Length: 288
Image 1 (cartoon, rainbow, N blue to C red):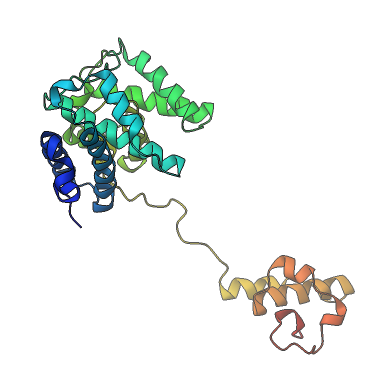
Image 2 (cartoon, rainbow, N blue to C red; image 1 turned 180 degrees about the vertical axis):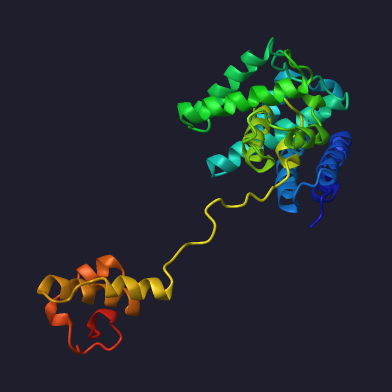
């Protein structure tokens, strides 16, 4: 599997060689960022489709403006799946930003920098509500976590969000919690959500979600508890079987202790099922 757009396009894109070379550079950068081969292949398909439309129109770097970019994006064939189509357009947007960062084209207008952490937090809450479908309580928790990270990294006023580095993420995960109850493992999930929001809304050029390490979180439940054999014997012995009710209870405990029947299975047993039925494999047909 080749990661080169030049290999895919052959002579078709000879007129937009400048765009093909930038596409190959873009894919190489994704590889250096440890993107999975399958993901890089999806980016390559999207960029190849974009380059093909530019080749058909013989677009030069000097010709690209806002209107041309919109035309090229709209001419890229749509995919059947809505999610795949949305992902394809996201890949093209990422490639266009790469071209802008390289100084090849003028980037489309970007969102203005937020004036405060609270303004950015409100935008994050709206995104969680409308795009992720989260409830009010979860959103408040995520926003509080968002403010903690932004204050940790920038202070009261956010700086350049693209200046956040993997080292910043690790420092935040290792930082002590004021309450003492938030470990690195429990911080990782909301941190991924935070960076997914920044990348999806175009506030960062790189998807920092991939920089959040996976941290094993030990279960607090521990091993399941059960009665010892002696405890079971004492429990059965405590049942008085000198009347009908006592004998019934004694039989029910024996069925659960010796045959492993569940409580609902014991309750469902009927008299005709006891005493040697035809089905030897049925636990409910075994005699006490």
